Every structure is written in structure tokens, then in C-alpha cells.
Length: 280
Image (spheres, rainbow, N blue to C red):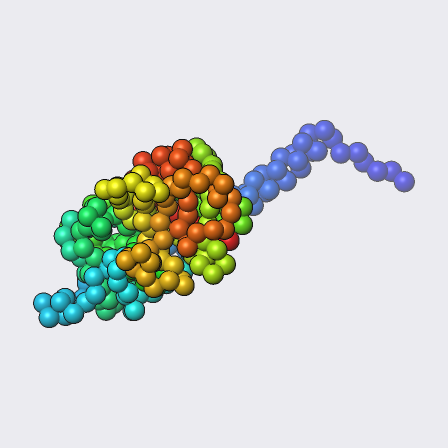
């Protein structure tokens, strides 16, 4: 049988036609995809509008508890992430501020400008437009509340420091910008008077007029779960030194954390409001 061979010119022509067809198909696909993209594209959602705070009358204001280490805020909502780190943001009220259960929600307390004669600095654990959620220094442990910041009567700053206390290892570690700067064995609470766990913060720095066991005492925003009062105070847990070095690494305190001198010196220089996370 005789089969006529295609000429080279014919073959080239066929290839050109096929190539052109494929290119056209590709253009159609690209254009189709672009059309689909245009149809699916949506403008970004506008930012949520700030929520206005509930107005509080002078009578209501007077009836609200002050959130300090001496008080209890019964309607406070507990910390939803009691062992989470933060970005170090802290808030200071320049005037007494109402604390709310949530943005636009009911008032639950008033935070004063000072705590134990030191400026009030509270760690921020959540933020929304013109609102910040902070840890509170009152009972129950882990109390939180929302403060309206849209009136410009608050200051914010950042602390690069974070303190972590591991009760099992009986060790305190100081971090700066996420990097460890020091670690020390510590004494913690006994089984009868345990050191409470969760995240809290450095509330104040006190220098006793007469040094007995520690040159400085650092109250935290947390309290003993077993002792309602201790030594005339409200059972506030703190960091402080101790003259007997044999106690470090043991569970021997009433709930406070006892540090060796160099550890106390280091922690006493971090800003008020710095986050402290105590884990089991």
C-alpha cells in the first residue's frame, strides 16, 4: 500500500495550529480564573466600632468595691488562660477607673491609682478597640476586668520582663525579652499553706522600716487559698528574701516565695505590673 508522507511544511503547519489552539485555551482558562477571582474577591471587613461604657452614677460608683489586695470582687470573671504568657503590655490608671465585667457590660469595681502606696500597674491580657482586660489584685485569685481606655485617662507601657516559678522544681526563673537572665532555687509554701498557681503580677515593692528577714518585700496580685489573713495583712502572697539558706529548694513557707539575695536583687528591679506565672 502506498502511503503519502507528509511534507515537513505540513507537519510544521499542524504543530503551529495545535500550539495556537492550546495557547487560546490557556488564555481562556486564565481569563476565566481571573473572572472567578474578581467574583470571589471581597473587601476587608471594617474594624469593629468601639463599645461605649455603661454610665455609672455617683451613687453606683460609691457602692462599687475598690480592687486592691485587701478586697474581694465577687463579680469578677476569672482569667481564661491562667498560664499563658503576654506581650508585656501594662496599664496605669491616671485617675480612679471603673472596672467592667466586659466591654459595654456592668461595672464591677473601681481601680485606684495606687496600690500599697505604689503606682497601680496592671498587666493587659486582652485588648479591644478602646478597651483593655487586665488582671486584678483582689480576691478571688485570677480575677480580671475590663477598663475603658477611650477617654485618654490611662497610660500604657511594656515590660520586657517575666518571672516564672515552678513549684515542682522549686525554682524561680527571670526572663527578659524571652531570654533567661537568671534562675534560683526558692522556698515555697507547704502542703497546708501552698503557694497558689496561675498568672499574677508584681503589685508593689515595700521596704520594711526595720529589716528582719528581708530588705525588700514584693507583694503579688494573688493570695493564699488557705489563709484569709496573715501577720495583720490580707494573706497576700509575695516574694522576699530569707536569712536561712538551708530552706531554699524546700516547701517550708506560708505561701510566699523565698529567694536568695542575688535572686531578690534581680527581681526587685523589674517594673511593677510585670507578669509572674506560677506553675505546678
